[in-house]
View 1 (cartoon, rainbow, N blue to C red):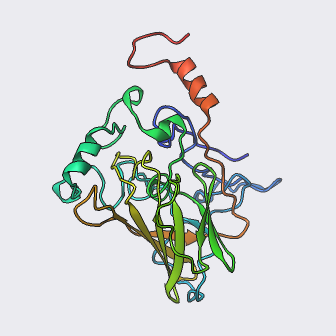
View 2: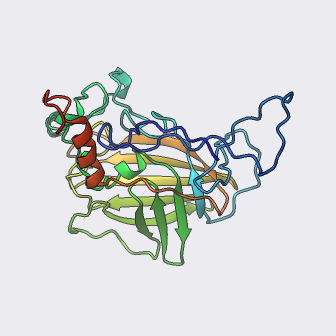
View 3: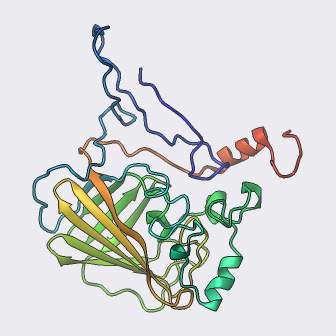
Amino acid sequence: MRIRFVVPSVVLAALIISPLARPQTAPPRSGAVRDQDAAPAAPVDVDDWGHPVTPVRSDHKAAPAPRHDISGIWDPGIDPVRVLGVLGASAMPEDGKPEHELPYTPLGREALSHTKPTSGVRSVLPADTNDPVFYCDPQGMPREVLYELRATQILQTPQSMVFLYQFGKIWRVVWTDGRELPKDPEPRWFGYSVGKWEDDYTFVVQTSGIDERTWVDRAGRPHSRDLRVEERYHRVDHDHLELTVAINDPKMYTKPWVARDRLLFQLQKSDYDVREMLCSPADVAEYNKIFGNPVSGKDPQ
């Protein structure tokens, strides 16, 4: 039997309880005899089916990258700040450091004042937040690749790239058939995305038409309908993929800024299980029923 360490997830702060750590120890084979004098084996990270997970290793020597191919199941690990983005965009976290202050326009700073995140230097208690994800709204773009970015499966077809994300169990299509982004589209949570190969190993995605109700990241950075998101997927070698994300919204920011800077993913085996991480209104209601509102002072019913 595997040992699973379960802690409250940072997925939805205190509103949803979800496993943050993966199962840590693989089970011994049936009938195996444990050597009492042997040193304990190193923990083996496994998925929910018991299949080993390949850890992210930048020093791993791998075969050359295939041309025009980023397909596969990719895992970036679970570092809270660098990967999961609990303080906002990992390259520019909202941690109070002057070098991480974003170049807001006056309109951008005003919009920022209306968001109430549960992390960073402007954090509020969960009961006071207006984070749309806390109420099970879709993350949208670019937050899907800036917060709780976990195992991601990429499928390539002759006309598109399909991204399957663990958080929210979301799928997203990036068109590669040469079409242009729509000029004045109806806003979508995840916008409209087109992509092309910049070179043999770098795939670049442009996304626009994103619903203004979404936040850029967990820190509550705002955006307007003019937001343009650029994702750069660079296949370093056969086993590694890097992601860089840039934000360009002239109404909210005086210049473009980098939100993720070469986040490293490790290629997993084809039988890797991408687990569910869903926001369930029923689970949120049950949590509030059990624990009550910590700010109200009322006892749970």
